[in-house]
Image (cartoon, rainbow, N blue to C red; front, side, top):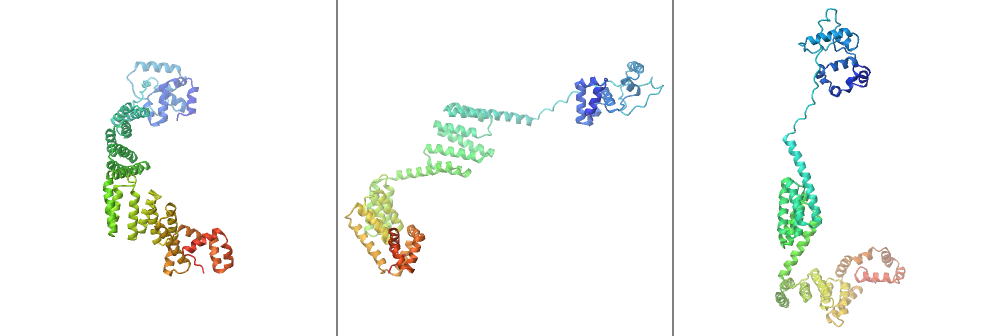
Length: 474
């Protein structure tokens, strides 16, 4: 309605140009432009009537008044103004419809112009509700709390622990819906060595976090920190339980590592508390007696208890316990368990010949003759005159010769081949393209095979296959 053309007409008319410099008039036009329905509030204002008459060409006034505003009838305008001053009882609104031209007899009875409308004051904003005020206050408290937290963090980094705690206290007092204030304070208490206070803050953080439905990672962080404090207080069982709770909230790599370290520490402490070398020696003697009586399961039990009471780190004779238990497993046919004990014996005491004897015997019974030979030879390098090692080596050579000469039964060959195929070295040889060609030539072209045999590497691999029973010559 009040576009550029309308405003241009007002500016060009000397009667309406001054109106454009009146702020309340311009505010009135802006209000009507934003909401045309508000026009009814301002129709009584003669300035608006005059502006509409000029800008839109609509006669919003009586005939004489229109002529007066257009400068067409000065005398009549003066007479009408005088009459209007004498008659101040007519406060009616001007007619909104276009007025009929006044006749000769109507000029004297023309109604006085309406009084200028008092400009309305801008509507005051509605007062904020209590909820809005509380929300603003809460936001302000949160901002202040975060500032206090930053001060606490800075003090913590500077190792001003008491100052840091005071800042975290203030932060939580201002805004108790952020449990990081509590977990940070717990961290400071931990660094101070105030572990009970640290645990109390962590418990409070977990409780408050559940009330607020806080991020599970924050709850897990509080639980992990509590577990750390419990470890420092040597309450390992409680610490382990707390770490497990933290992992149910959030499976964190750091928490998992701390759990594993604590479990290992607890195990070490339990073992250390159980150590008693006197009891260990008693159990060893009981094991020896049971072995002599061929009560091998009972002997295993006593040797195991002897190791628990006197583990290698405190018992220089522990390797003998492993050797004795390996002998029991050999008698019981528990090859794998015996082999494990024999290896442990050799690790603890590499120059102890009995360890090689135990291992070699086990490998021999497992039909691993090649491996048993290597074990006996290693033992002889430490004790060249050991009769058990020499006898064992001789038995292995006889067993291998038996297979190579074709004297072994089909059942023995089948068992030997089955064990050999589980050997990674045999598997590599069998999948080697060159060796596969050599094996094929052995069957189809012996002359070509003889040429292959001149190669040392091929000859060594072929000997391995022959000894394992995979290949039979002749």
